[in-house]
Amino acid sequence: MMCISVTGGKQHQRSSVAIAADWFAGIAMPDSDRVVVEVRIQNLTDSWGWVSEGDGSVYLVSLERNQGLRSMLRTLMHELLHVRQYERGTWGGDGEREAEASEVLADAVWISGLI
Picture 1 (spheres, helix red, strand yellow):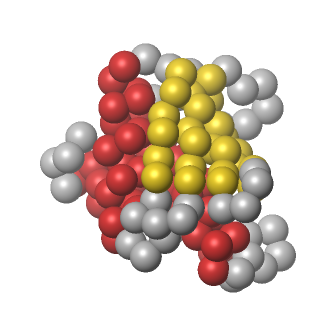
Picture 2 (cartoon, one colour):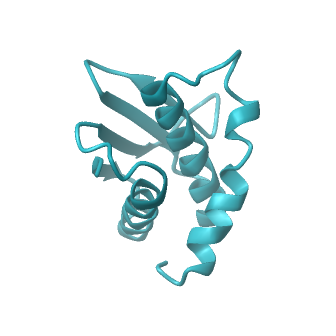
């Protein structure tokens, strides 16, 4: 399974993001043990979040710290879907249409009772 680290933000944000990212990895990328995702919760000036590909299968996900938790989880799921697209080579166009499931995933982890 993916290796995930979370830094920045407040403790409850880090904890919730780590739980949600682990949940995503378990259902959407269970065979991706070589993938490393570093999540940073920080002040962003131009978006709710973004992802960039680092060296090899290392990805940096940045999340805006000044958003509600549900919105943050939705943004996290959106960016993790992009990680999955990169890894599977399914990125098409701007990748946004394929990442529309982020709200459904965020709701699913929320309803699961893990957070």
